[in-house]
Image 1: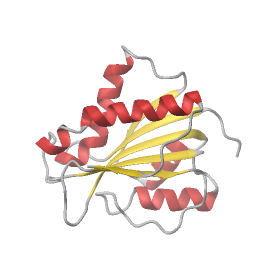
Image 2 (image 1 turned 120 degrees about the horizontal axis):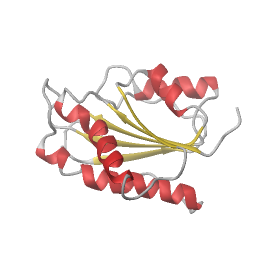
Image 3 (image 1 turned 30 degrees about the vertical axis):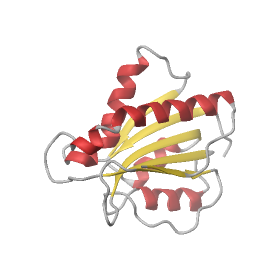
Length: 172
């Protein structure tokens, strides 16, 4: 498939399971900010419950896909952000880092097998503290939302400007 210059930002999760809604919170904030600082034409902001087929459909034919999702880690450090990058190459077997049983890892594998990975996939996985039923983010996760919005905007800006991408990194 030919790659176009489409950019998509996807907030994955469930806004009714506390910290699992961090991706949705980032998308909501990006939509608010887009009124003040326009994103490049063609930039899509969307949310998804983590369904692999829906994720594949959202990022198919994208030059850049940025995904924000909640993650589990042992031992947990609520609010810690892991930045993972896949530059169009076929990934090795991915483990499920999402807070969902099926989701991001399976979507990446399926996209790879089908040759439908975006040109560049950047994942911001945020360690959560609370995924029980209810709304609102924990204090540690809520404190990261503005920084995540800034990071996503920087990803888009670097991509649009054609500047060198950042390597894989974790944010304390």
